[in-house]
Image: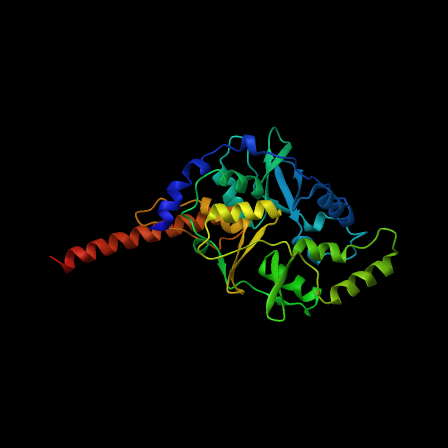
Length: 316
């Protein structure tokens, strides 16, 4: 199976210790206002923020903050949720598992009850680019038929799609063609009020911004590729354009989209079973992930034994 071949090819990357991949984390306090948190995100060019409570790491991110109201006064605490963390001696594969399961881009690294940094999806992508991945094609990893929005759609509806579908990229259609990609960051910036505004004018401005049409909002610097383009070419184009996605086209028709998460899925854990097993669509709770994986593995093992017994009886 091609998935087994890819998994074997990525084994050295998967087992790499993350110590050399750590970068600065964006940390917050529960009492920080949303406007202060968003300013930190913008300044640090980050996606996720973190807070250490006792021995647990709490986090939120750009997509989660899209539903925020009263940004200047509201605290970030209600948006914080528990998330797994790693240590310096953990592997790239463990980080990739957390990123793909939780749909985030940064995983916190904790040492001696202190957040010492993060490992980002982008840093792992750069590590992947050092390998010869030219035999891995876009059609093996891209998300087919991605959700799109017309340019005359409201920002509010785009926000609803992102938060309900848990996605960060929306290709924008204009006269039958993709003109740009709207991201969760674009929406967050569009509803960010000025700190000089009064509370009433701030709420009014946010509501007005949400009802505006998408129009030209978004990025036009999105790399594009064909379904048979190789992974090295795709990664290099994304890094050069400093974007988190690549559009897969055929004759000016959108076929799919490749995000950091799609690429890191190549590093996802494989269950050791007699039959290769990959599970997608896992819940956010890591304990539930382990439970589901264990049950699927046991069920598959029992089924495999049944089939083997049946085949022996059938052909005796």
